[in-house]
Length: 180
Image (cartoon, rainbow, N blue to C red; front, top):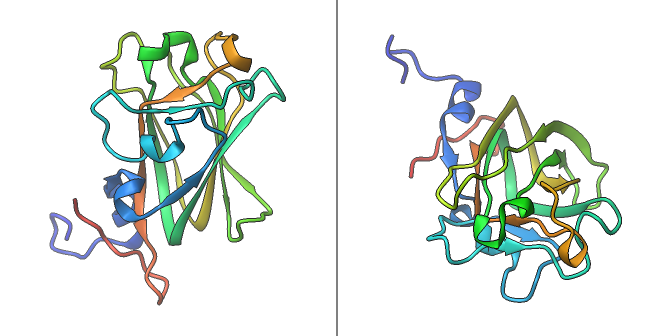
């Protein structure tokens, strides 16, 4: 409920909740270095585990790396946070990227946001936060287009962890509010 006693609208609820996607059963797929798969970045991290691009399949080989998320249900999302794993070197931090959505795992994909993430100054920096007008889909994609200068192994990108802002859409079409 809002301070005035009225119930929050679906849009207000979707804007209110940040969550780690791994906690909600979200599945991900991305080319990964063995032992550093994308699911490592979908829960709150102690700093020891993170996602890391596959050797030779970085942003300098082909111009982009894609991480696809299957939320298992339709979610209304309105934001994304990332934290770079600066343990690998600050130049490995994500720089230019896009967030896309689709109703099908095979697309078509619609751009929701184009952004530029800040370079981590140390391994405890919270990273960058991005927001957009709430929109709903089951499938979401992070298209990573550049890093902050790393050229090793094809242009490595690392992510320590990430969060999404939003909530599950109920069968009737309204947004269900989740609490942590």
